[in-house]
Image (tube, rainbow, N blue to C red):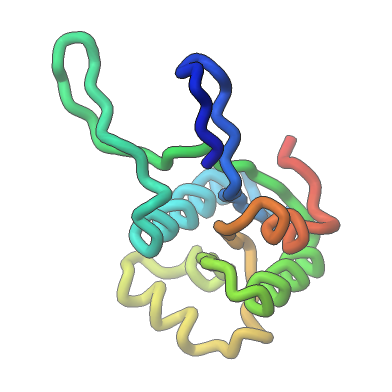
Length: 146
C-alpha cells in the first residue's frame, strides 16, 4: 500500500481484490457467489482484513476487507481463461462452481469441488487477490459488472 504524509490523501493499494462472475447468473446468484468468494480471501490472507470498526457510541463491529473489491463479469470461456491465468501466476484464488448451488453446507461444497479436476470445473465465480498488474492480466477480456 502506498502511504502518504497527508492522512486525508487517497490511499492507492498496490494489490487488487477482484471477483469475476459468469454473465448468465441470476441476480441472487451473483450476490451469493460474491459473498462466498470474498469470504475465502480473508481466511487465507489475513493481510487483506482491516481493523475492527467502532461507531461514535463505542459499539464494536467486525473488521472487513481493507480495500475495495472490484466485481467483473464475463462469459464461461472468459472465466475458464481467468482461472487458468490465476493458476499459472499462483495467485491466491477462491472458486465457486455451479454444483455449489445444489449443496447446503461447507462439507458438501468442498466435496463437490474436490470431485472435479481443475480443467473441468463448471466455474460461475472466481475471486483473485494479488499485485494489481497480475490481477489485471488475469481479468483480461472481462468487463466491470454493471
